[in-house]
Length: 215
Image (cartoon, rainbow, N blue to C red; front, side):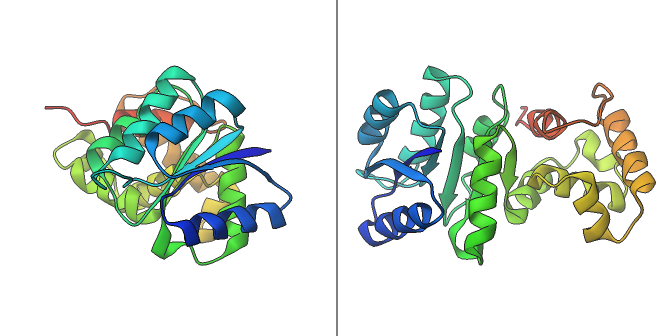
């Protein structure tokens, strides 16, 4: 699996590269800004990218905007945003785009290397990996939305779905049986007016797409 990293902090970039190489992943390129990121993606066509939100020159949102642009140029390009910040406007735009292969993790909340590598592999395979805090802020943003009709347990299930967990993991985390998870997911899709279905990461993308900002 070939990975392109865009991170302007040299120590963090080198640390990420070393960690990935130890996990038997190929680091195709390390870029420090959006321009370098686009050039690396065009040259290497990576299986997955790791992108910081804030990059030179202004250190505001260059990274996540570059990720959105790259997804536009190369549809389906897997992107794992790794940042200290939740940029909600651009996060919603990134997450509500076509296709899977999207992740958004917070640097300060990544506590285990194994979990990070697992999340990266899941994103590379077309899945989703979202930090619980990112999900919480997205859900909070949607007050007044049909999400308000969800029960507390259904919100719990939705949040875990958005993080990328399968039904078995949801059962374990919420201490409920498999049939209950199926029932809650069915209720979620019905209340949100989404097409029925409970397979793969398409269900997560459908929920996230429905969370996009509407004015």
